[in-house]
Image 1: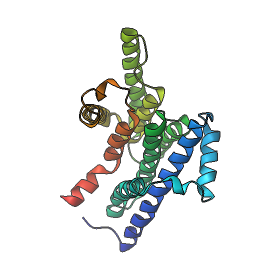
Image 2: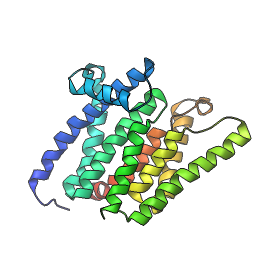
Image 3: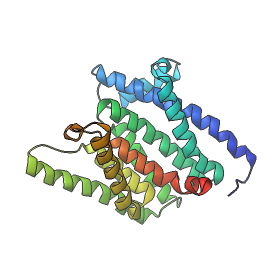
Length: 236
């Protein structure tokens, strides 16, 4: 598999640098939430202004910077291999997923200021004829949200408290808008298996009893669905 031109490879270092920028934005937002700021778009814009002004970068550790740079560069590899408007849009979606995953890991929440624009971007691309069909995107978004909402309602009736946040439901709806309804079963299964494995093996013997942020696992499954196939084909 070859690209249409060597220029596309220049996107990799740009994506790597943007991955570090995403980490700085996520940490700046999480810091403001920890300080008591409202969970809204104004807080996100304040965090964005802080990072754009050059402040907040020192909070990103080297291991986190390397991980985020590598992940977004890997996502960008799909664009390098097959440059297109859809591939570029999916790399941007992966950047949003990276920010969401980091925020959820730090704060245990997925802000509407990111999940809802991601949802509308997927629907608008489908309406423009880029990616899945509009019919498929709308059905997937509705089905993804309704499935998690229904599951959480049953869990709450059984245990007396919610087992999942509304941000997870909106994130799955957004991923459905980007990837279509056919992806939903495999994507949700992959996210659940990854979450269970992390809870059981990554937290110790009783770690599965503690609350677990599900957003990072949904984001990982969504990113794999967005850019996974060309990257896997490239390596194998």
